[in-house]
Image (cartoon, rainbow, N blue to C red):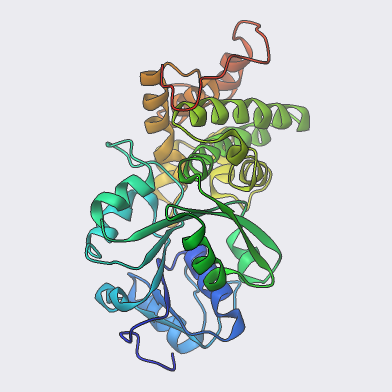
Length: 344
């Protein structure tokens, strides 16, 4: 970078996985200096010396204005941080930035195991001074890094004033953020779709056809909507980029880690073996049991989510999982939806 990383101002990305690296590359596409935090020294060296991330995003040639560091303290002086760590590690990372008072844009999609908290709830406790927002939407990392057109939801706790500031920082000709004030909806859409993508991967792995995949997406969206409305999300948010848009993308391609996990489960590989052999994270596997527990506590029917949980836990096989969902009693397609904020 042309300026020291510790200089006041600038933008940084916390997390150098595929998604974090892609976001750094997108931000640097106009020649801007971008700081990228990576835990692994080999990633730091490769980004700085070779302008590549061979571990997590080998397909991308990175801009020379991206500078990587493994010293998280260096990032505390930057005005804007995109937080792209795995969902289950977000609390500990934000805890190391507990005094950060700039814009913290949360880009992880998931629900914290144990607490059942959404990412903004985790971050708000760990770094109470940070100005929080959420980026979510249909985003395959390799496409964003390649500069292919992408649109996302940028949900801001600080309303339109924060949106005006951040949209200038983040928008690029091929990366288009849309404003929302519904952070709950943006987070729930991103978390639930990962679980449903596992189910669609199972459908694909069992070669059940496009009809079955489309039905899984539609009925999965109904689950997302029921859960989201009960938690206070807006229906319009869940029908947009960060809900239905992201759901369709991740349920349709092996580029989705969660879809690929479901497909491998359908082909007979045990979940424990798949998770142990992955360097990248399929967030849906961590989110599914938490989501199931929250839904049951609120009396919300989520049969696809429950079936995915049973498969991940080794309590059923992929064919039996599908059979159990198909054997449910016949019912109306349109069910009464809970009022926003109603958890009964």
